[in-house]
Amino acid sequence: MIKVYISAALVAFGLSLLFCLAIIPVLRKLKAGQNILSYVKEHKNKSGTPTMGGIAFIAAAVFSAAIFSRGIDKSLLICFAVGLSYMSVGLLDDFLKMRRKENLGLRAWQKFTFQSVVAVFCGIYCYRAGLTVLHIPFRIRSIQIGWFVIPLSVFLFLATVNAVNLTDGLDGLAASTCIPFFACLGIVVYMQAMQEGMALVSFCLVGALIAYMLFNTSPASVFMGDTGSLALGGFAAAIAVFTGNGLYLALLGACFVLSVISVMIQVVYYKVTHGKRVFLMSPIHHHFQQKGYSESKISYAYFTVTLVIGIICILAAL
Image 1 (tube, rainbow, N blue to C red):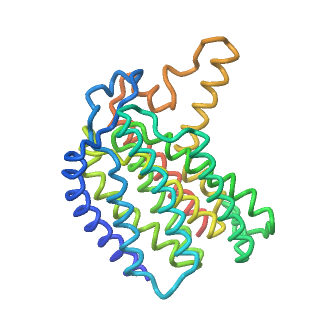
Image 2 (cartoon, rainbow, N blue to C red; image 1 turned 90 degrees about the horizontal axis):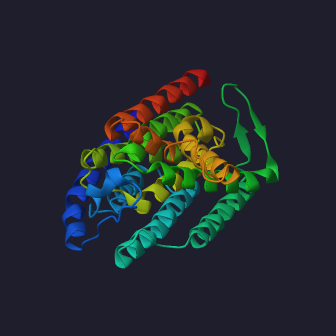
């Protein structure tokens, strides 16, 4: 099975490379450029960089996983549907931003409503399909949570999708964090000898993202946009929840969690102190940027932290 995973990742890499090469000129021709927020002064020179690049690597990962999947796997099909659904709403959001020539696409309540509907659907699916086992990290045991899988799934989906979306703020940051995330999550699922389709999707995403990084490292030639970040969050949550590894999301996705927490701290502190800030800018990766760290160094740090945590999780699961 390992050979299948490696082959699938390599095919995903090749397809992603081809799709990126094909789509970037098209996006430029369509003038599908990113509108940069005015308060992020360091990003002014990025205005107009093609966005919606997430279409390329998500399509590559899905095609490769479909090619190498063995038979009809219901969970795999639903995982595809979930990831592509989140990609679609992200694509609509990016399209509206492009059309309006401003950094405002769908309203927050519109995106949240859609995300919630998909999350509830996934929770109900897990309950009805009997996917109610929850693995405990660092302990070789699991527990049955029954109907509680529904509210837990809703929380994990909403938290993960928005956390990945918040982390997509610097060249290569979200992609470089997702590569070790999906690689380690795939290994954990493989070691548990369950739902091979979920491990397959993980490794396909790794291969596709590595190819995408060739175009997204600083200075980026293309951005993934909400098209890519929402899809990645959806796939991450689906793979983890469907395999009973929901608790691993907070561990392997520690850098994603850090983005969310930094925003929450900043907002609360700002309101309580009437204008004071804890960070120079949030999410926290912008704080590091304001401190003088390059985008490449920040991305490398996020990659390293995620990889180290992932290795620890894998060793603990042996």
